[in-house]
Image 1: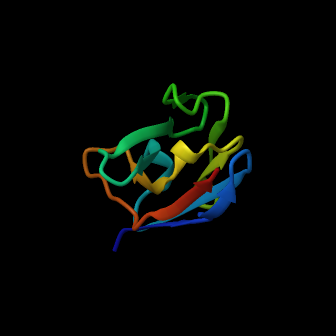
Image 2 (image 1 turned 90 degrees about the vertical axis):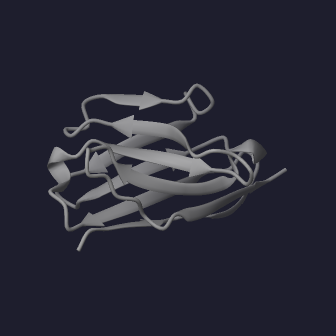
Length: 115
């Protein structure tokens, strides 16, 4: 059974930081590129950041470049999203997703940034 379990969300003031984690099980983690997505109310889900299998290459949406950092620990089957200088527009449910033909989603973790 495949599980992607996100954690680390919460309520934070603008300018603050959060670190999200996504623990994977049931997949061969180190052959899956991984991504973090977010979905704000009334908006489409968007890709925020992605990372290759080794972690050697990352990509970011323009809206989070310079503020968010994606990383992974293949020994722990976990991908992270470090979020700094948070803005109210970062408020959303954040999901991790394995970027493979057979992709899976976690249940999401809520991030709320107050102004």
